[in-house]
Image (spheres, rainbow, N blue to C red):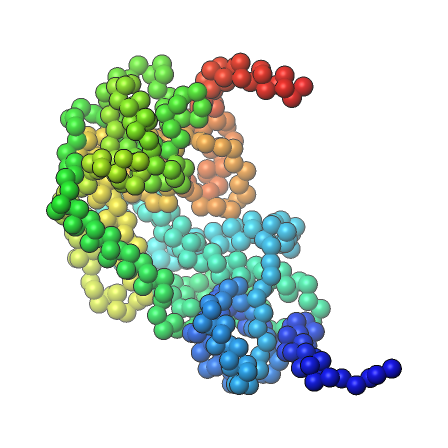
Length: 467
């Protein structure tokens, strides 16, 4: 038997040794990154002295530049650590108590977001100033949801690490290295696992922030030139008190519809204004046929974003420039030196400014069209519409779209309604668990029950075909 090893086989053997999975070598520490990038590699280089040998790097994602640089450093033997992309399936992995890891991530991130927010409520001067102007309950939920969105990814990584720890037979130090952001110290103060350390590193620049800033600049420039060269509706077609309906499911009452409540309501159609914008429930542009159907019924319609309609030449509504200045009246009176000292105040200032600008937009819309009732089935991230209606003396109405089976605080509420129509008596309990801000819940049953009678023949036919 020929036992000699060719040079090609030797190179392959050395390559296999370099790609050994972390549990097959003597590993003392595992460094976890959300994204293996150039700043992450710089962090590894700086912290190298603080770790012993046999360190393994795991990451959720990687940039092409970051991975290429890592391979170069490995080739030059500047870095001798192994790096692996973490393989996981949230639906298949289970927590310690047997629940899906996805549920655990939702629950823990919600609980931590509430703890961080409660600390902000007691320590922030700006928070006390904001709630003098807008609803405390709605603004608090808005803050909690934003915090959860910021920390969700890192809590997901924590749960994946805990799952790996339960599968390991030996003790290994796990360290999460995460890009620094404004609420990092608050997150560290309520970090739920003492065995998994969390540290931050500074990024050279935040690519997502740069892209967002560029998009915002382009959007403002386009909006400015469109105001000069194109005509916009700046006042409503009627001064009658109107009902605004957000177009999401359509106007066909023979299926799920935004007008399921209209038949038998005895509301004059001229008091109803249907508005269009871009939302996930209705991503396709609305055709001219739908616009003609609305007009034939006798209702009015308005477009808030020209991309929502097939006919891009339709005039859209825009608020008057600088008509309202809520955020200037509130935020410009805030002592700016606090923003330089406290990162939490900078974060709160930025998020408050965004919310107040949205409130200004909707106040202008409701005043221009004299909206007193706003009906919307969409789940909404922020309470801007609800707060704006309170400022103009209107109410915000929503309804249940599907049955929910939430666990306690597994999700933070998307409902900022004054009145909410529910299917059954279970829904109020779920809405209370997820901290939704609803003034009145009316149990009305399934809102589209008329669909069954209108499609009776089709239903019978489908049953016969199945039988």
